[in-house]
Image (cartoon, rainbow over all chains, first blue to last red; front, side, top):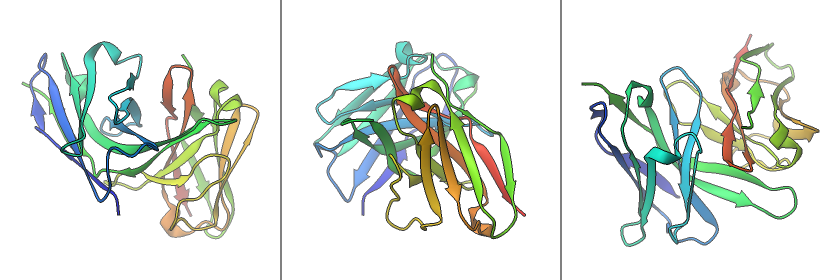
Length: 125
Length: 106
């Protein structure tokens, strides 16, 4: 059974860089069928897609965050990572990683399944 | 940029049928997927694509689409279905999520 687990600091100072890692177990991150994504949820609010990566290293990002986001993959460790620079209090959120399926034939669609349990990152001095 | 719009809150009587909707221009070109999120838990995929249910999701959950609107229908809502529901879709720029609908089962 595929499982994902986020890890990283729970507290980051304003203007610094948030760094998180997602470790995938029970399957290979190098599967040709899936992307791997990061999604966040501010306390009491909805979900926001941050960006996604393919095992080859190909990425695409939310245009509203693109200037501050870097997602990378380490296939040897079965991990992918998120870096978000110049953080402010508005970046305080639960950060989730998830496997992302994509169907591109005909009327396309994507889905996220499974998700990690999420990790709360607070931006505060 | 594109958006996905959901009603903030919907209620349903126990055992009745409820439809949760998601509207957006991207839904004319792409199917939606739907997630259930209970307090303190990660979202769980319940419907993806035209009307596909992951293993373990009860068949009372179904999806449909018409024009710029995607719908999640729960036929015979149970107390355990009380949760937040989010739609998601693609658009030309990336991936979108709706704002979420809080479902109350009365």
